[in-house]
Image 1: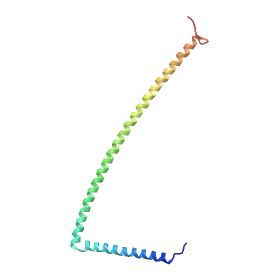
Image 2 (image 1 turned 30 degrees about the vertical axis):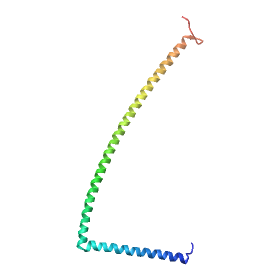
Image 3 (image 1 turned 180 degrees about the horizontal axis):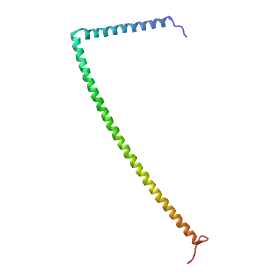
Length: 130
């Protein structure tokens, strides 16, 4: 650990002294404000007005929150319906693709059988004469 020089110690003391003074001033201002709001008629009137505005803000905030929940719920419901529709369309496309693949497979089998039949009626790769 480094040893602090006397100038570093002085700087730290000045900083902490400034912090103390700042805290003292802020504490005094807050105390004066609280005394005004709770100790005078005019302060009580301002406080009641402020409380009324806070109640209105709370009500408005709840309304906006409820609206947001409703909008999000509607969007989620719509997204779920769209997703279900997409799933159904994909399932249908897969079934149609599988059906088409079976058709092609059957055609290939049929063509393969016909090719084998043609081979039977050949001799050394040449067709038999009638």
